[in-house]
Length: 280
Image (cartoon, rainbow, N blue to C red):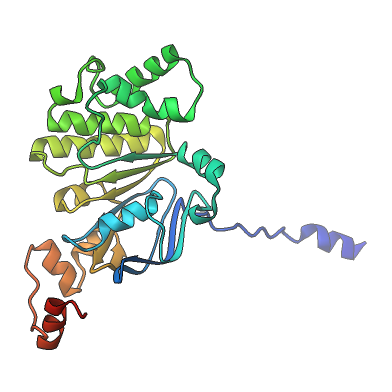
């Protein structure tokens, strides 16, 4: 009887598995021909997080984004989105995953021959069997979300740069994705319009409970919206940290990036000659 009572008083121990990241990159290498452009890249983006990927021109951030959204296949390593290794998906599985992912490309990438509303409805036409009336209602709802109500019948050429960016966001979120990617959302915008777009990204994360990955070289935007920042340089991850952690980083290359100081260093004559002769 005593043993039974003791057993009943022992608390049950439960082991909780760590949450699966919405984005997980492990050992990612990428090559263009003989040139390696990404080197052993590793990062994780947690559910509901805004991760900003930043770096100077040629750092590899746009190449990394193309691998994250499945436009390029890695030379080595793994990319998992929402717990699934995208390299191992067949066409049907990839199509199913794409329904849960939105991408807002740099410059908007709207089709000039279609109206704004028709552009926004493109993912619905590709991935659903909804009737046109329902698709039109969903497009108008998303135009309301990005503060473009009434512009559905406009052509892309009739919109300003900031409006084009917001229309691209409306298309990216029309299927209520769980994971949203942005490619240089503030590029080419004046500071006030860029700040308004940053505010929109923050509101979308809260209102739609999304995980967001943003590639940008705009420091003000990165510092405003990021939960964490991944800094790339020459295809390598220099650091992944909070905004404050990145600002306080002792890494001279990160400080050069933050303070817009050019990199300096001695020229290797032999390496320079190999580049000129194409023998490198």
